Amino acid sequence: MHVSVLTSEVLHWLDPQPGQIVVDATAGGGGHSALLWERIQPGGTLIALDQDPAMLALAQQRISNPRVHWVHRNFEDLPIVLDELKIPVVDAILADLGFSSDQLSDPQRGLSFQTDGPLDMRLDPTSGEPASALIRRMTEKDLADIFWQYGEERFSRRVARVIVETRRKTTIETTAQLAELVRRCVPRSKGHCIDPATRVFQALRIAVNDELGVLERFLQVVPDCLKPGGKVAIISFHSLEDRRVKQAFRKSPELVKELTRKPVQAGEEEMRNNPRSRSAKLRAAERLV
Image (cartoon, rainbow, N blue to C red; front, side, top):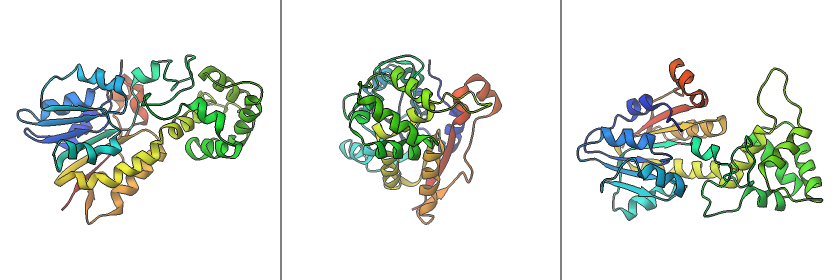
């Protein structure tokens, strides 16, 4: 079962109060949503978004209240959602950029190579193209660029070449096929237990879901969605995300005050109890005017 990360840190930096309007921009299984909802009672309003309809349905089981708005939308669409709800600005926004354990453990999602399944990787299975289609249509150069830029894979060109050679003979449709292909051409680092396929899978997932583009567009609209004094907290899980959050928070010091000069990370106890929290980094900021 999925366990939400940095829960006490989220509550500390957002400091939700009774009667406030709060957004959980990436509801997932609803763990953070439930905590925020409890803090803004009585009289508060929670707006919870997720692009994954299955996760949204799971989260809805936690809270049933007319003041909770469950919305099947990508978090970059937050201004549209607020406009539809006739809510101009909110008191706090949370975005957890990680994935639920429920998503990772579902072989039909294709997000993990631990069990074989369709090479899909879409977080919203109702839109976009699966990873198998991306691999089928992209040039060798474009594949290599994705593996390098989004996965920082040193053997990106070799992997792309082998993929192109393989697809001339057969289709690459499953996670096991791709993982085994990558393992054959990427040596395992000495002293490291990370599977050689990890970086390639990360890169493909980011490309399939346009994760960095979505994040950048979300960061652009966040200040306009907050009241003066409103706060935002974003939890990232790799350097490509964290770098963009840091740059966005420091871009307009006259508009946004960075509350965390360094990313906040989990304590030793949480890391022991929830190993997934080891890579989580939280940054928070406040709308000034």
